[in-house]
Image (cartoon, rainbow, N blue to C red; front, side, top):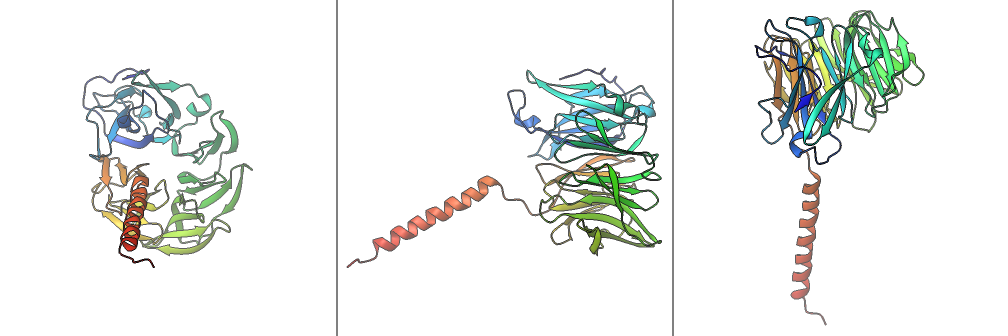
Length: 371
């Protein structure tokens, strides 16, 4: 496999600092089944190794990554923390992604040809000079891209031409979390000071500040993804009480809450089909809750022992998740949740019912004396 970056020299590689799934939405001679689901890792620098990106194939049957990367792209020099990958946002089409560093953001394009994969760095001046970002997010339809900076600066771009839809230098004191609604109409953002705002993307303007009392802090936020009645999930801290609040996005009022992890939350994520909600704690635990019942389906204790979980991302096709922390790097977990019905399984049930009905019909008429 090839890339347009230099190969990383031999040495002790850095820990995984960020991770993301890449699902190819199209096939072709150069995209074998084993390469339709990939993982991109961002790795930090060490004294003997520069920061770089790894692209790895993922085996869904064995639930494991390939032992060797398909390709590796160097991001900077040995010990260069300023070039260390901090966050990755993958376009829904699976053919490009944005990687945030302390300097700004870099755009990479995946090119498949002649049974090889190339990772091409693309010049993108509007992204390269934005400075350190805490949050990156593509809309579900891939037409919007938003960044939220450490300095509280919010920019929403139209993708891929990068025309600016919203530019608010003082959106927050500093960004804590961010998400875009399923219909790409709204963006929710939270601040390190505990406030939260809703933005109307097409109008390029703030819509409302979420209501909270003086002793409440809104921290993590995610929109629902199941395509039914839309909700907004937020983690809320009030003294020693930590809850996950559900809000109706028609009026942005709270309609209920649940105590899921019962400890300080560091990250929140929703599965692509909207059925599950994942929470990571500041002491390294993770839990997965069923959105319909808002009950915990899977608890993962000490997956990042003693270290805040910095991100959790659900696999696009399987009940598997990648979680990361600064101390322990990346962990892949197969979730103990009810398996989804595959299309072929549903058709098999229908076929079985048809066959049984035909046999019963035949037996009935065979043993019936018609007058």
